[in-house]
Length: 297
Image (cartoon, rainbow, N blue to C red; front, side):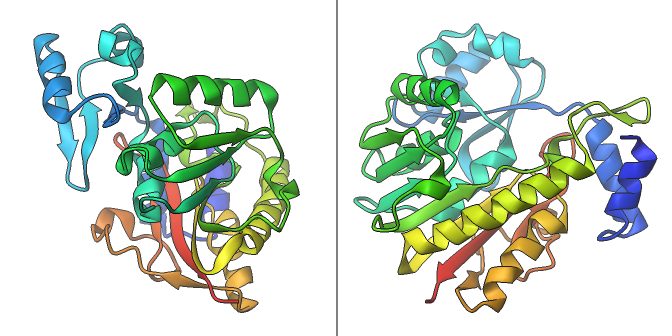
């Protein structure tokens, strides 16, 4: 798809200034970011190692365990013992946000519906020092093995990996909280080079993932306790994969939106749903959407 065709898609939901910002963000080379894994290390230890290797980094205001790497590539970080030992995890800043919004508490039952490769699953565990009861679901056997490997490497406990399509889970299962980081078109992570999108992105893909998103969110609602929380997220910036999907279930009276109070920065407030977050892509952040829902019936 050409840049011009992509602009025409974005024009449906964004002003010209916003479209220009999105296109610029998807032409920029995104900086590497990592999460300090509190199950195996602390901030002081990791920052000392980075300092000793002359690795420059920057912190973010909303998460003390997130670091932006300013002068190295992923391959450089992967050579460090702290990476090999699972003391850090390479993860985009945007993808660190859904587990924070979910806010799982000790002994709560949590379902991660599409959990491979395990970045968000392990973050949920780390935030409460392995005291959350997590069911991590992944339908692809190869990706499920990678998920198991990562969870073990990162020291994650009290987590059961289920190799199954989350849409086929038995409705008799019930959870306090559910993270649904849904399959999407990836429009928030696209790379534009020489006027062309070089990733797999098409109208056909958008339509295909829309159907998955609707089915998965309906399933999530059936699996969470009444009064329970669902965090729905995608790495897409298209309303038809985000706000439009969620509004369908709001209009059915099944869920209501809870304000994501943890993030009040203007950077994150681009959604047409009050209380939700939509992050536009730039050199720091992937384009992302996050909404916090409460099941009401």
